[in-house]
Length: 240
Image (tube, rainbow, N blue to C red):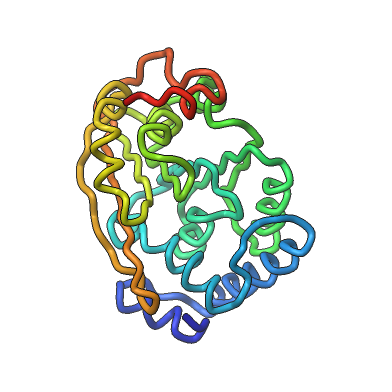
């Protein structure tokens, strides 16, 4: 996807980019490539690949959740890596309040630099493991919307993410074609953690025609205090 095609394809989905927003994406791409030479942020560095597989792919979450209507919706992105999906969403919807938690401090440094250069406001960054972050009273059950892309299988991801969602809030897991199997595997975890599956939306990424799924889970009741468990435990002993 060329950077010229990018705004046109978003416009087809009802997302119109201003000149400033187009420039922010261009700057984001330049910074990603520049910093990637110093540290491992992404294997995808060609412009067309970044615009399709990182920028457009991240924003596709907005095709299945309305980020435009809520005033100061507070989103937490768990394991954002180089800022995906939350920073492309933030560029498109500047009113959102974004928090990113990532276990690698170097990546946090990159993300802070990006938001400063792009002049994005209401962005917070935490160098932490998701397990300890989810037990922190300042963050536990404080977020309207929790999102994660390509972090872990759904039983594990649910334990890392659902404790952060407010009761009545939403957790969205961005997944590939294996989503149906993961949902089946995660039924026990979702229920134990206070969630309920709302929907599994399917989407085909244009040009390369790859399958994407957006698993949307509603937080119906408070997560039991013992979750998330100690760092590493959810991965070693998933709730299945």
